[in-house]
Each structure stands twice: as C-alpha cells, then as structure tokens.
Length: 452
Image 1 (tube, one colour):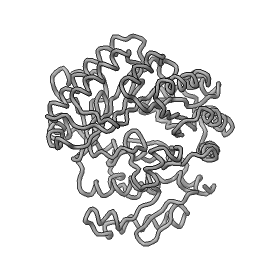
Image 2 (cartoon, one colour; image 1 turned 30 degrees about the vertical axis):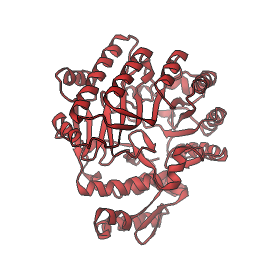
Image 3 (cartoon, helix red, strand yellow; image 1 turned 120 degrees about the vertical axis):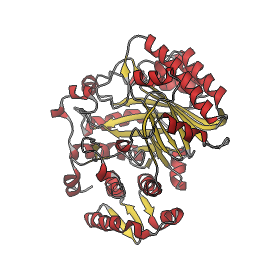
C-alpha cells in the first residue's frame, strides 16, 4: 500500500461488515415477539447453525472488545447455565421441530470457564432440542491460561472438532500492558492437549496494533505461532474504542501504533505467514491450502458472519445467550446484551431479544455485494443484480464513487465488475462502504473501528 493511500485513509472509521445492515441500525422494533414469528416461519428441515455466547472470563484483558464480565466466583456462571438451558427450550418451542444443525460455535467471553459437567449439560440440551448433523462443524473459543486437560476431554466427547486459541502477542511488555500474561510453552501445551484428544483443527488468533507492538515483535509472534502448525490463523487489528469499552481507557494511548505502523505490522506478519504456505483469506484470515476455509475461497463459496470468515452456508444462524445475534431469512435479532436484562426476559418466559432489523429487498442486494467484496475482493454487479432482479443502474451513484477509488488505486473496474487490488486489500472496507446504503443514516454517536 502506498504512503499516499495510508495518509488518506489513516483515521477513517468504518464497520467491519460482519453483517449488513450493521449493528448501529438495529432498533427495538425487532423484539421477542418478532423473533418468535421469524423462528416459527422456519421450515422443519431448514439448514441452520447455532452460536452460544458465554459472557464470563476469569479476568478481563484490557484490549477486549467482547461482551463479557470478569468473575472469580462460579455462582453467576452456574446461574447463567440454567438461563441458557431455558432459552434453548424457548427457542426450540417456537420453532416446533428439531432443526438440522451444520455448525455450532461456542463463543464469549471464555466458554471454557464453564465446568465440564455444565458444558456437557448444555450440549445435551442442544442435541435433545436440535438435530446435530454427523459431520457438523463444532467449534469452541479457548483461553489457554485457564483450560485443563479435563476440559479438553469433555470437549472431545461432545464432538468438538475445531478450537480457536487466543494468543494476541508473545511479547512480554505487550502482554503486561494488556494484562494477558501467556507464555509460548503454555500455549503449546494446550495445542498438544487438543490434538492428543482428537481435536485436530486448531486456529490461533493474533493481534496487531496493540500498545508497544512493533514490526519486529509482531513478526516474532507470527514465527513462534507458525511453529505450532495451526490449520488457520487470524491476524486482527486492535480496535481502540474506549467510549464503548471503558476498560480500554486504561491502555496508554501514547504507545498505540498509528496507521503507518499498523499497516507495516500487518504486512510483515502476513508476508511471513504466506511464505509458510498459508493462503490469505479475505481481510485478516489465513488457512492451509487444504483447509475448508481456503477451499471455500477457491470455490467462491466463502461467507462472512459475526465470527468472521466462515464456511457456514446455512440461511439461519440462531444466537443463544446474552448479546448473541441471530441471522434469519427475515433479518437480524440481538438478545439483551446485559446478563440482568437477559435473565429478566428468560425468567418471564420471553425470548430475550432487545433489538434487531428486518431486511428490505435493497438490504439483501447491498448485503450480497458487500459480502462478495469482503470475501472475494471482487464482485460482478451484473450477476448480483440479476439474482435480485434489479437493474445495474441501481448502482450508478456507487459506480461513480468507485471510479474515484479507481483513480486513487484502491480498485479496478471493468464495466460492472469491481476488483480490489492485492496491494490495496487492507482497505477493502473502504470499497465495501461505497455500497453501504445506510452508512450516512447512522447515529453520529456510533463510532466504528479504524479502517487501517
């Protein structure tokens, strides 16, 4: 990426486009009653996936942007397990059939803060109320500082076949600053436990742009992670949003890498990872060439959802737990973010949805355009418009803006086909934002992550 492009877009904030419309457009008009109707409309054999959110951690890392709370007592976690079970029943009762589930993702927070018996308890309730397919992708997010071999054995017995292990950085100063002390040996030990238990697909999650990170220590972390031979790697840019996550205000802003430094950190790590034989997937993921994620990319079937890039093609994603978001054919529905509000709804026998958005035909059109750009770095507007029975002329204003980006070197255009150049892929969100018809309607108090 040229210095001119970095200077031009440094400081710009844009959505990450894990959904469209994006979360700032969710409103209370979509509530539990609307969500219940959407669930009831699902066909009995509709392909679906599940996401479970566990909003607890043993301690809070200062960089964290997740919906979670630190607790050293198990009582609130145990109480939450009961609420999750009740929500599973509420949702399944509205659907009225045991939907086939192709993907199941445990996220958080730290899902493995749950005791093994409670992990199994929730899993059993899920398999009782839904039909988990034999080849289902069952994934769990892991904090290697707190998981035990007993946890790993329980996960394996539940059929978990993919684990995402958080690393962020192995640099001691960075770890101390963000309050996440985690050695390479600790991480390696957990990866070995997972593979010994038969959980062979291991993802490792890294970050750049953290306080005191440099090109050298980001590259060093990448080198050490590659020695663990992960199937997938993610390399996320730290999003500093202290107005949304107050604990981030404890980080020293004067040592946060700025735009040019962030770009250099990502480029150095990405180059090293690609040299090791990994395929770059979309904006910030890497996978071995035979990994399903890389295969989906090659086939033009890569998808994007709230967990990032995915092979999940199910038209219905049902979110369970506080703050979890469901993506259904009719639109998005988000549960109450706070555990107290979530608990109040569940105890009253109501679906705990607090907000969401119903999709319009134009939303569906723009969503597909944005998803293809974010996944493939290219989109053929004629093909997409054909599927939606809309004339390409619908995008005349957007194409005029794309032509400006072409002049800047961000994109190439041949008629209705738009491509993001390999040297500008870090700015794919800038190109995608051109097709965000709602972006200018966002409440100005809603601020997004940095574009670089």
